Length: 269
Image (cartoon, rainbow, N blue to C red; front, side):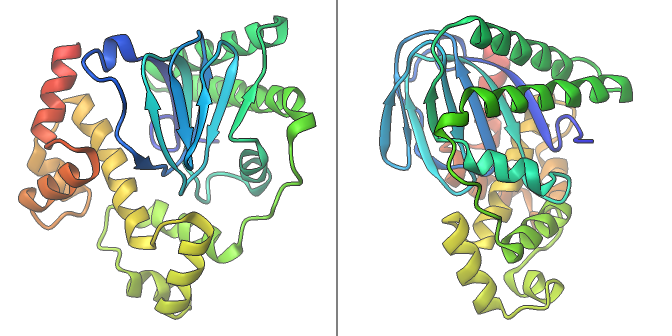
C-alpha cells in the first residue's frame, strides 16, 4: 500500500491562485510520475520540448527524467507518484507506457475520472490514518484502470524498467535523507560507479546525484509547506551538511530561497 504524502499525493492546481503573478513555470526535470487532468482550455504544457495546447479533458503523464514547463493559465487535478520499491513493476510499466499527452475529450467516462481525481485529492488532504490510506489506494488503482481503458488504443508496448535503474531508485527512495554519494550507491548495488552513472543517466536523463537532490527538494517543499519545522531542522533531516548548503541547493533547483518559498506559501494561504 502506498503511503500518502511520502509515496504519492493528489490535489487541485489553479495557476490563477497559486501562480497569479507568473506567466510561465520554470523549466525543470521531473522526479516522479506526474498525472494531470485539465479542467478547461488555456495555456500550453511542454514535455521534453514538445508543446501541447491544453484543452478540457487533456491528460498529461510526465515521467522521471523528462524536462517540462507550462505556460499559464491552467487548472487541473493532479497526482504525484514516486518510483521505488513501494511501486510494483506492473504499475510502473503502465505509467511509463502511458502517452505523455492524451486528449480524452469530455464524455461521461472523463467526468467520472475527474470525480475520482477529486475524491483522491480529498483523502490526501484529510488527516492521515490507515482507513483513509486504504481507500485512497483503492481510488488510485481505479484511476489507473480507467486510464488503461481510455488510453488503450494509444498505449505502446510497456518497456520493462532496467533492473539496475529500478534497484537504484528503490535504494535512493530509502536513503535520500542520508549521505548518498555515487560511490555509496554503487557499493550498495555491487556495481562500479562509472557503470551505474552511465546506465542511470541513459534511462532517466539525469545522474543519480541529481535524482537524490530532486527527491530531497520535493520533500523539502512538503516540509516547508507543513510549516512545523525550522529551515535548519529541514536541512539536517534531508541530509544537507548545513542550512546554508540547503539554501544554496534549494535556490538552484527552484529559483528561490526556502524562506521566500515559505513566504509565498503563507501569502497564498
